[in-house]
Image (cartoon, rainbow, N blue to C red; front, side, top):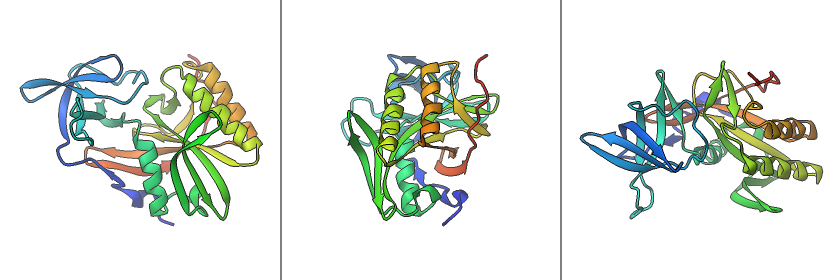
Length: 244
């Protein structure tokens, strides 16, 4: 089993990725950036608020679209905030989870030899289900970009979908399966993790209920740079109140 640091470069940004300056955001999924002498619209798949991250003139990293012919030719990947890089692409946690499993970097996934992404359970679609000698393991992944007083917090906006996923994970555990939530903290200034009860108290209540029911919570800090993203250390979960 390799150490998390051995996973450096698990996900690398494609050729053609470049730095730009953030201008504005519209309708959640549209971001205008300045690159060279022109302004262009790029796609953001992050439906959260990205609270405190998007500052006019701030440096961002954009990557070329994976699908040829897509209307918006670039995707927002990283935002620079006070000298650190923050990963805002919400597809990264699931991709990194798969790569970490393939590389044997997550001890939580020992004993599972089959990985399926986007698996339906009940009325929910969860990000992954693993099978192996240890049985079945259901996993939902979340991207974390908010840090308050060195505590990584999720969500950064009220999330009915996130609440639904927690209820489904609780149901799976009660039915005898193993279930977990993988929180990828894509910034370097977090030392622990907890639910953002000051933003979504219903989610926070479900988070602690899920913990009590046996749903596993795996917050991991990512190692983020303009060259790529790697798996860093696992963070402790804190019950410190988030209310201000």
